[in-house]
Length: 108
Image 1 (spheres, rainbow, N blue to C red):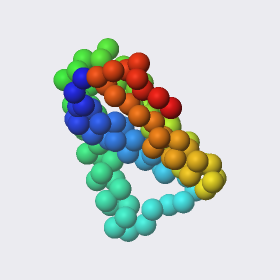
Image 2: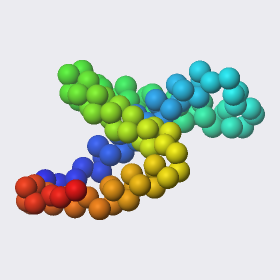
Image 3: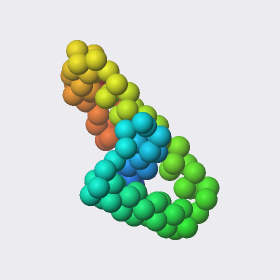
């Protein structure tokens, strides 16, 4: 199985879109040039998402959206952890040995 860097990029774009919605709903308001750059980034990510939906088709785009939203949810959970929990989780993930050539040999 070959890693697809473009799919990973698309996941991060989805993360920007999800995070932007949270930021827009928060009581904290962006000011001046930060607001400008935020809006530019958000608009570009929305255009990219729309383009990808057209390229992939609605069914495949919906599957990608579900997977990417789940991954971004995991990232949000990591940021929500207390420091010691986050450290333990990261240490646990770093010890995970995934070998795509032999999936049965993967160990946690």
